[in-house]
Image (cartoon, rainbow, N blue to C red; front, side, top):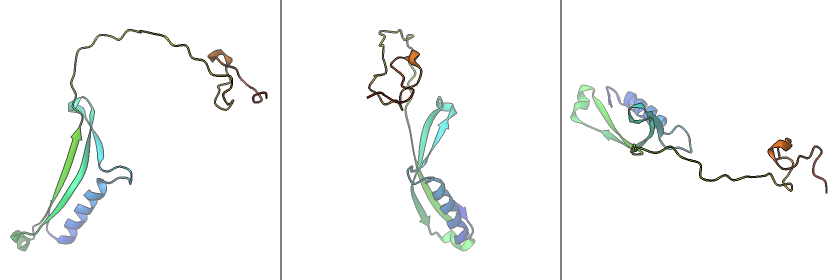
Length: 118
């Protein structure tokens, strides 16, 4: 980053640092990469270096922002269409709470219009 004044440079760096911490839970941000099969890449702020140089006399202040990026490697392979190997029949248990049972008996189990009987 280049700037002519210290306040301007601090403002630019503070804005970029805030952008890399959008929430308290996540550090960095994710971007989709269209040229890489729409995989997500994570960008995180690694560190900021404030450089004091002789060019400050010429109104050239500089800060270096180091960004770390990670992404999953994609390997495309040929595959055969998956075939169904087994079928499992499930049923809603009759002892389940009526609050979590759908009131449609056609999906299995038993419905309780006014709650379960004791």
